[in-house]
Length: 401
Image (cartoon, rainbow, N blue to C red):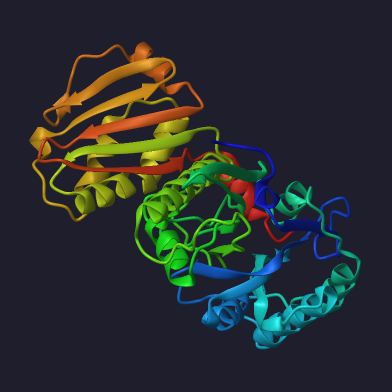
């Protein structure tokens, strides 16, 4: 069940944010903190880009013991491709550890923003000195980590484990520089579930592939992105340390959180006007279906056709054809679906008679599904993306200014 509160919905968590001066807009917070009253088990997944930010290096080191207590994130500067980046990330960790009287190694650190610029540690130091946290600080923190995002991304769910009420909360950022190659954005998750580090990492890993790894906005895998989760055990459930029914209940709830945020990220793609959902059914296996769904979602030609309400199904088959999957094009069928209805536009790999005005009406919605039936076997997958508009170029042509 969805509830209010974001990262502060679970017991024992507080959050807050401040403007420290990295971003030029003085009304925009650019430094966020999330903290637990107790030490937490912790897990994370990271971008697979070979060029990755200094905060990822430091967070990996800090999470070697599977423990954390605090998350800090700044926006406006990625602290990536800087000779002193790791030194500055460590300094930032120490500053916030001193502020909240915790061990430096219990800090998860993240940065997002422009690559190749030195992190202004003096400004961050000033920000840390004045930042305050509260049980109502999730929205502030979510706003502070936004870069080109237009929509604040926050969610929380409540569920039961053996009659014990448990909660998971999260905030995320992501709008551009997003392609399905974990992690492709930032998500910070909190939970009051009592769970071991090993099971927490396993649960997180299980929920990544069908959610964030199935998102594509522009084909660019970022340098800084991660998904982290910290669990303080305050719910009081019996420790989850095996893959039992309690573990499954936790994974199901975590999947709900991550799927919600993944769709929000896709819908808020830079310059986007539509959420694009690509469903593949009837593929030879699930792995083939994932490749096919990702290929269609990533296609700039498909994205622009969706933006223009153009039922150009040939672009969809073209994308399927370069997905490195064996199939018979003569068996493929394609439908468009939205709140405005549905329409079959391709059957057995060829055009069918359809009313262009009806197709345009179906596509003229804020959420579009492309349903592709491969007519092979039982493989299925769903990918999430958005349309591609002129605004995407405008945003990224002037990103540093």
